[in-house]
Length: 435
Ligand SMILES: *Cc1c(COP(=O)(O)O)cnc(C)c1O
Image 1 (cartoon, rainbow, N blue to C red):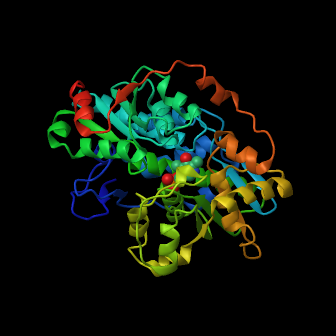
Image 2 (cartoon, rainbow, N blue to C red):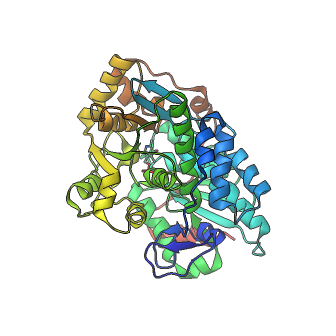
Image 3 (cartoon, rainbow, N blue to C red):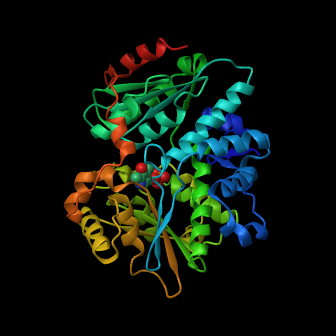
């Protein structure tokens, strides 16, 4: 399968090139040239299959031409070697809990898959140089990527994070690992971290010498595996008799996860419609209402993993609809929640249904609650464990939220990080020591 750039000015790329480069030469995003449709038989029996079996079928369809079946199935198996996400049902609304990965982030699946796929390609490649993964994080991405790539041969990970800008739990998840993971504590903001990474990618002298890639959802190897969830979520809703008119609701920031859901739909998954849930960062919602897209700086909210003012996957979603606002809005609607509404939704949902939402899931819940047509059921992605936002959730819900052992374990490790200035020369000096 070949991949094209959404900007249309770059040569088509193989999967290997798309994964190693991240972004195309024209700075567009890679998209698969064809989206394969799975046979009716698969959908007829999907409720009898395990998460692993479902994921292997989807991976075969997406990556089977480029990765030998045996290797691909091993990559899927290693990626998903943890408890699979479950659906908890509340009336006609199911919360698909995506936080069952090792760092309690849904980003674990994409990060682990990408790490193993890169490992596969480096082993098969004649280029023996190390691949350096640069990742700027405001919290969750850094931990998922660092843990996903931990111990993968031929790959070094460099996590840039704002000093004092991430929670202590999040910081432990990428500063205590060692091995092939280095944490850089930047004396600046998240935007400064992202600017440093961008400068490195623009530095042609550097990119000619070092093999650099990024590991956010612009990378197809992180984005496409997220489609596994939707098939698995559908299968569970079908078992519950709730898949007839399924509405899929995705709390969105950079819109990678929604994009993966739309791709699952193009592969034939019977989804009636999609809902993109936002916090107060509502550029996408505004686009749905008006047809004009006006990215702007993000504002801070309680659902901070969705504090994005210029969603990086917007162009991919537009591309799926050939830029046609009419057909896009026929499939996708939106919802926006303020911080006040996030808090009241957490409390209402706990009181009425006994289910404890996190601030991101609360945006999702509110976007579909009382907004379903007769006969419809909704599957909401519950994207974070409530303990990750302990203070907010405890305050809103009025109950104590225990920290799961998996999170607590990270806090016992020893922090190691490299202090870094916010200006490019300092980062360049660090990069110049790498091979
Ligand atoms: C990353 C993240 C999101 C947003 O996902 P996108 O793919 O960027 O839209 C939502 N919730 C949580 C908890 C996240 O970590």
